[in-house]
Structures are given as C-alpha cells and as structure tokens.
Length: 298
Image (cartoon, rainbow, N blue to C red; front, top):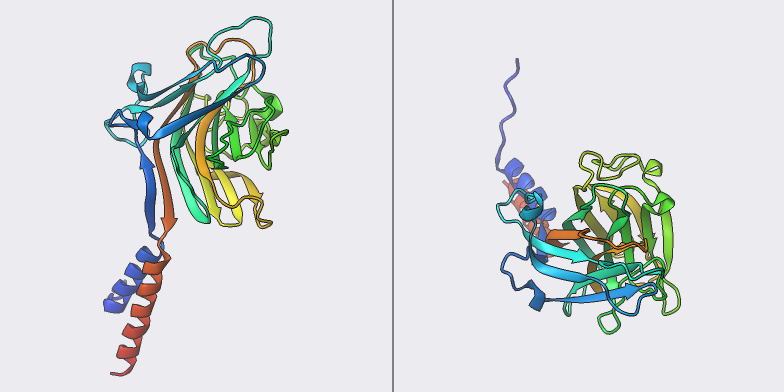
C-alpha cells in the first residue's frame, strides 16, 4: 500500500481558500427566544369575505406544549405561532391568510433565507392549512398573499400541511397587483415525489398526522430565485426581466376553507438570512496569487 501524499502549506492554503470563498455572512436572524420579537415584527392579513381579521400571532409561543422539540437541535422551544380563520362566522366565505415581516426589513440581489416551519393540524387530518414564505414585500403597502383574495404583490410560495388541497398542495404567488393575487397552483404532492420527508398523498404529515418540521428556503442569485423544501428545489422564478427589485421577506400561512380553523396554525423558528462574502474570497485569491509567485521565484 502506497503512503498517502504529504500535504504542504499550499494544500492547506487551498483548503482554506475554498472554505473562505464559500462562506456566508448572516445579515438577519430571529429565534424569538427573548420574548420581545413582537416589537421587531409587523403583521398583515387578507380575508376572503369576513369583515375583519380573524387570526392572531403569538411571537413567544412555547411549542413544546404541543409536544414539539427544536428542529435545529437546540434546547429552546420558543417560536412564532400564526393562527387564522379561528372562528366560524356562518355560511360566508371566510378563508384567510396571515403574514409576519421584520419591521423595516429590505433585501435584494444575492441572498438566502432559511427557516424551520411546522404546519400544525390539531385535528390530525382533514384540514388544508398552508405554510408560506415570500420576498419583495412592499413595506409601504404590505400584502399577505391569499388565493381567494383581491390583492397581490410579493413573490411567495405555499405548501399544504397534509396534502389535502389537490392541485393546490403547492402554489406560487407571482407578479400580483392591486387587482390580482397572481396565484398559480403547482400541483399536488404526487406531481412532486422527490421532496425529502414528504409523502405523495399526505405531504409532510406522512409520519405524524399533526404535521412535521420542514426546512424552508428561498435562494436568490439576483435573477434566478429558487424555492426549496427540505433541501429540494420545488419551483423557480426567472427575475431576469427585473419585475422585482427589492423588498421585505414575509412568513405566514393561509386557510382556504370556510370552516373554523380551531387550534391549527403555522409555527416558525430559526430564521436566518445570509449573503456570500465575495470580498473575503477575492482577498484570499489575491493572497494565493502572491503565494504562488513567491514559490516560483525560489
């Protein structure tokens, strides 16, 4: 058996270069642990037919009371709990969406959003709450996207917590306006069998009828914007035409049925927005060039 090659300083430098070039810097994060997140976040909702908002947001919710542990492995179990369409207002259209957004936040260009989301179904089946993530929210005129609403605006994606919404199990809101939600269904889970941790019929609630934690991501390189669930790219949006320029992030949920939502809702935690650090990568590259030149001069 041959001896393994010896690593000299150049190998170590190259390894360090790769690490630095691929590093990312967190420009925003929220874990809700201090109990004061309500002072940092704003709430917006959109209703289908009822006269006013019928939901709530608890920014310091202890989800261990529902038997859930921290999906990131931490010891804390405090997150935000969004509930909507909580009461039955009779034989009227009363579907609703709720969204939260960091007050005054603004993101553009190259960035990545990661968070943990749990679409919670207290009844253990037969409900169609959706989890939602979006970007390019207008802080001056915020809109919580809703399939049967009247207004649109942000670019946002939704997924059903238990796969009971047919072709609307997955959906996207894009290029909405004051008179159009911009909603487009993306099919049911049977059309997207490659999402890790999702079942073809019950989605993320395959092993637990009450739901499951899902790693939700938006990844933007400035023109191509991707939506990922548990690390798998589910949908993309081509922004090369520059329809969207900048705006805030939004996190939320919606209920498209008219019946009351009881104790169901959407729990979110461990939100992080990161950007690459190209300046460090270029600095390391310049150092590498200088290092190689010195080696050649010997």
